[in-house]
Length: 87
Image 1 (tube, rainbow, N blue to C red):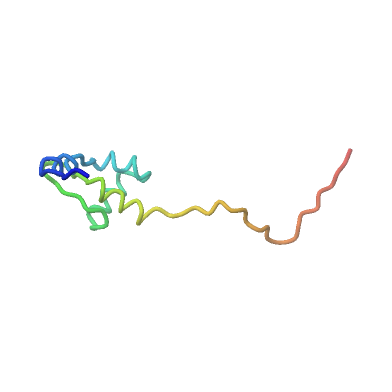
Image 2: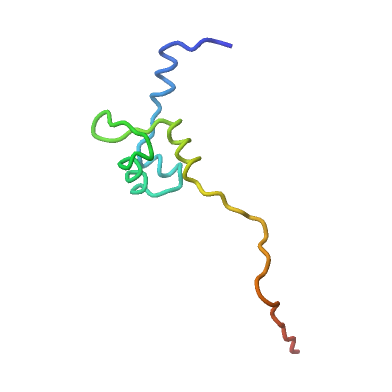
């Protein structure tokens, strides 16, 4: 196991995403990303003109906001339909 230097740490966390990149990765709209940044749901920093989002923050955001999809078959509701066969 190698020790991380301060430079390694900075290199790892300097790979931040723009809100547009984050929206593509998260599968949500660009506007939703900006709204969630403004509301404090998605942590981001603004080093200059635009926001930057750290990968670890984006991963936590996706995990927190993504809804799970149940792909198991659903039972049919109601009575079965009658099928008429005519030849």
